[in-house]
Image (cartoon, rainbow, N blue to C red; front, side):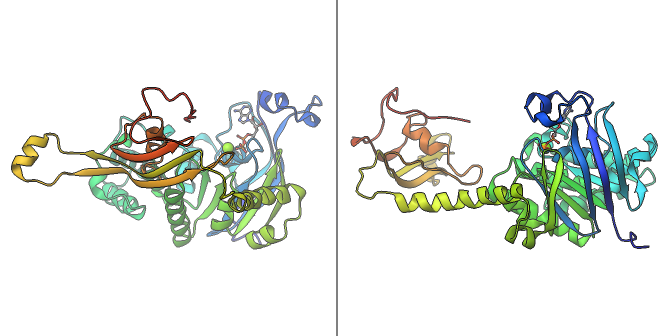
Length: 389
Ligand SMILES: Nc1ncnc2c1ncn2[C@@H]1O[C@H](COP(=O)(O)OP(=O)(O)O)[C@@H](O)[C@H]1O
Ligand SMILES: [Mg+2]
């Protein structure tokens, strides 16, 4: 009876891939002793319904491997030892038929990049219907559609997007669709592997707010995999820290963040704090006496959506403008690194683009190395370098 309310049990779990070249090549030599190279080495953890457990650690430490092991998505030939139980049922013993129902009905998966899972040739509605028809054949098409629309509404996708294709959605909306697909069959556990890493901060916060709210409302367990300790700290009740395939620390979020025990957790926390501190220090160090190397003064770039200016003048219609950049001003001092951040579509790329004359500012005043270039720098910008991702 003591295990009655435990949803997920991971007990002494060990996983070795059939061709573990990557870890050996990366030089973590102590495992290169002729024995298996354990991507997961003796992992133990439990999760109760409604709990949110964050799994953090540097890239390659084994986080996704744990997610894949829970869903039995490891490549053929992988060596798995230990126990994995969902509500006391051994996951490793499921037959292929049971496994098909288990994925989706018992455990839902949300990936980092939904485009890798969504079929570009299928509408969002069809994605939902196919999932429901595969798992709930007794449902009529109408019932399935109603259920799908209700689930899409829960993640704020309106019904009028039903017939649209994945490419017609923004990255954030696609991730909402992926969450809706994971929730569609009301699983008991959601495994979310870096669910918002490819999204900007504001969209990411909205998605995680919704995901955690829905899990709480439906009493679902959430295993949230992320490399970002601060993010996991905000959304999870407990945090498990992994390092080189081992679970080095697991504790309640407040406890782990205020009194990290393991040196690796301490270094993770220090680097998160260091990022914040160095931003403050840099701001303090800015020498007001130095002349700026780059100055942008009220830079604007507005696009007109009206196709025919003459027609517009004659009809007396107002010009429809998109303000891609609207009155940006800043100085960049010698030796200073200036980060330009903001959500997708806010105009970040336009400002340096204008500086290098890639976009052609309509109205701008800016100076570079004490020379003033009122409108255009010229066809080529030899004194600057821009790095695009
Ligand atoms: N399919 C695979 N075949 C062989 N090795 C793999 C495979 N997938 C992951 N690995 C290795 O397993 C280790 C853990 O990887 P992973 O779980 O993806 O890490 P994380 O998600 O923490 O970044 C890494 O050394 C990685 O190179
Ligand atoms: Mg991963």
